[in-house]
Length: 263
Image 1 (cartoon, rainbow, N blue to C red):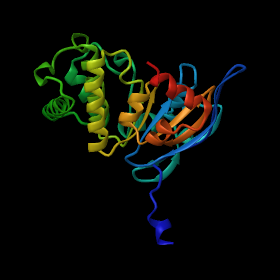
Image 2: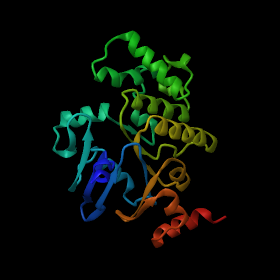
Image 3: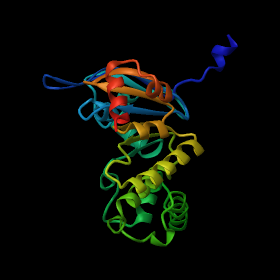
């Protein structure tokens, strides 16, 4: 009985998510749980449904069926799509973060780096210029962006630096759950490696829960405790990351892993 009481409770519970586009099923009956401090990778080829699933779970897209329950800070588990639009918007600005593959989608390109970071704090009512600037400098430093560039526009930064800026913008409000859609895709290999090291340091150091969509199994191995493999909109395999990658059970997962290992 005590073991049951002390068992960890999920921060996110996803049940039967289905999304259709006409006759095509993009996601079919997807269910999983995410626990505090856990990083979950969703992997699969292009068109497998992984980004659609991420968008449904993060409430950026309404599913046709299923539900998403999130453990809020003060009211316990709450069904996300039963919330009002204003409640979901506040959740997305405070307790959640979303890191886009294309950093330009997650940044305001016509305001400074510092203003990009401080904007989420302003959504919580912080209006003190000195505090906003100090927090921006702190977070630019944490993501290893030169703090003397606080007044530069994002357009003046490289792709890797823009991703770091987007990460700082998301983490400044101390969210508990981060969604990441191919966060290192399209970057040079050396830039990608440094960004992955940063993401691993931040997720573990801050005990963040995270869902990471990626087609790169090396990214999944480095960042994620557990992984889901998707094919044709369905979750075909799930398990601990090393277990799935070292001993895949589903033929599709075996094919994915073997294609990476081939010279």
